[in-house]
Amino acid sequence: MRKIVEVSFPKNKQVLANIKGFELLTDQPKAEGGENEAASPFDFFLSSLATCAGFYAVTFCQSRDINITGMSIELSREVNKETRLISDIELKLIVPEGFPEKYKKSIIRAMDQCSVKKHLDNPPKITTITT
Image 1 (cartoon, rainbow, N blue to C red):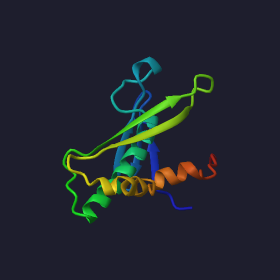
Image 2 (image 1 turned 135 degrees about the vertical axis):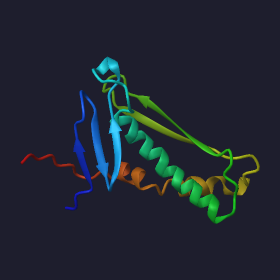
Image 3 (image 1 turned 90 degrees about the vertical axis):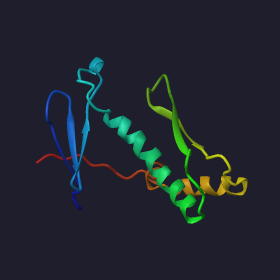
């Protein structure tokens, strides 16, 4: 396997990931014993889904010379009260004024090509080991 992420522990509940030379700091809310100085790992997990879908939306628009000014994505979620796990996620694409109606279904199909979404649809086996 190829290593792509290294993790260190700078202070308290903070966890720092180094990904291909980029640093990503995570923390926990104060209620969970953290400093609340960064988003939680789970926040980044959800953000990775939204930003991946956003990449496909932007690429779709750029390939058709569609102005993306004012375009955004909102991610919403529902949590199962019994399991406390997310049961539903909705990605809402807010299209800019004048966005062609004929492309609305097509841009959703493009966003569904997101590799993060595809991995959630077909999750990999995750193995945890120690040395």
